[in-house]
Image (cartoon, rainbow over all chains, first blue to last red; front, top):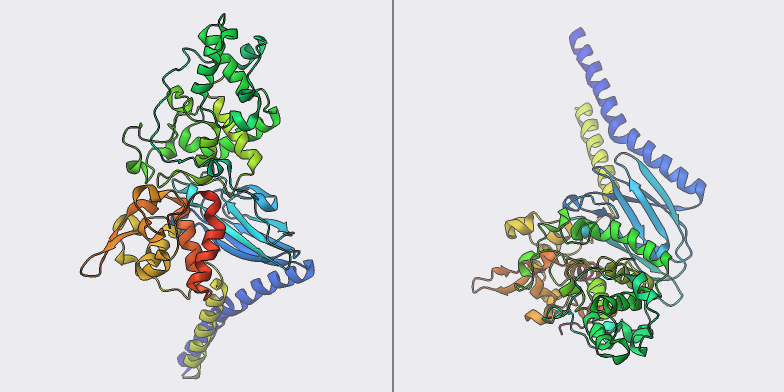
Length: 336
Length: 143
């Protein structure tokens, strides 16, 4: 009988522990969080960032209300992630496993705001994105009010393109181009016109101009380099350099040669144009890059590579960032 | 007997609490998805968003056929977002998969939106319009 009573006590204790773990503990945690939220006067939204193979952001779709402050509590159970929500001004460089990062956001205007991981958390890092839908009474904002230039000009991003027939023998220099004090035609001084031109065509135009007869081919290429980059503010290039390191280097390589480790095994490589080298674009390849206008690059960057594993950046970059990135890509061929 | 009852009650309560904790994460649970085993191995091993999009495509082909894709795949003959996932359905009704969406961010974004809107009970016409409004900035659609 005594033994039965002892067993009864044991079961009672076990039950107590189970109750503690399953009921009191969760209630305590959620009660604490609710108390914190109420005391702070903000709504708390938990976001768990996992490697994309394990689910990516959870949730990856959020609905917030314009004017309402929300505290994002972001955590990671696996590796270091980052978070950017460009439209809401949120940038979290590091979300370490086991740590919680809190960010308060108060979206002003209804609209669709993309977010993305900013740390190379695995081969499928480029898949780690989400969307915040902000609702409210005001009209929705859109990132652009008119179609991007490549659409306005009807440029087919996927049309077969030949490499430039003329390429520089050495790396053209922007400073050398500036030092020539040459007069550029309007097509190269007007940014809207310049962006539509392939650089190899611009070279040919300058080469054929009798006023440049005394210049060597290398000089004319330096003129092209100067024409393309003379109006780009250093701050824009610096911003693009940061974005390139964050978003592009893992596939295209820090040196722009298309040999980044994450680009070696992209799922879409087999779909790429068989006449082109397999893999991410080599930005130091003069034949390919000098045949491409800025507008074409804008489209590719904005939309991504169709089925090739190149993600779209139109929902993450502003117009200024897109053009700055294109200018930065030119610097892989042109030296200062 | 009362102890066993208490234990069962506790487990039920705990289970309810855990379920409540996980509610609200992920995409809508009101949409029909094919089982993971219905997918080829590469799609089974794909990132969760891609895998789910393929599961949705198998179970809801009409929903994806209803919307255009904006990734540029019209150039390779795709007529809707569905074509990025499924080439055709065989005579036995089984899907012939296309791995295009495995390397495409826009294709999966579009299907994820359709899945969410379907879960919210939106009409096919409304879903289509919302997809057009959201994605036409990326280029010409394929419908």
